[in-house]
Image (cartoon, rainbow, N blue to C red):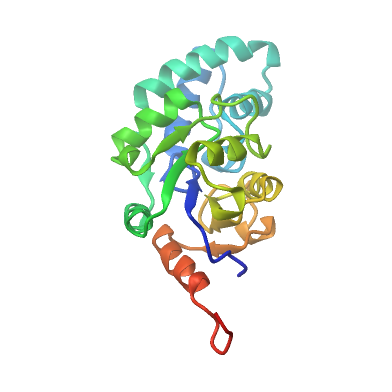
Length: 232
């Protein structure tokens, strides 16, 4: 592990990191596809496809069921309609998330949520699960000109937090988060249970992998302690 000793803030991903939302995606996609006379897709496909924004998920879903990309605007309208209606109803907060966020705040870290999910989906979900108050800022996939894995959203979030990238930890679940963090100059920790396109989180090259978010404060505490025998 090579986490810096002076982390002042954390940027936390949403889907696959704080909340298991595959159930929401599955229901909203099934209803939207049914409106278009198309068959549903399975949970395994959804889990390995999410993470690059809802428009990407929908385009990949249309391709998966053999539908033309020309249906994207109609499909997007139906998907938005259904997703907003069921947002959070088939989603669960992962174990350790509430405790981990509270411990990070108690430790004095500033927190921001940064997701590729549209902000109109992300904010109601965080409110429904009682997590919205944990964050000084929340940004979605449509908050900036580009999405993760581009570093722009992380750099803009650091600016909003008032912290340097090197002192701002990215916490996510996928290579999108790791790539964006590396390009932005942020340290990065990934959770082991997320949606990393079917690959183990460690393959994305993070500074550390954790099994629960409430393990993160201990990692940061260990990184901040002087090594025995070294002058401070």
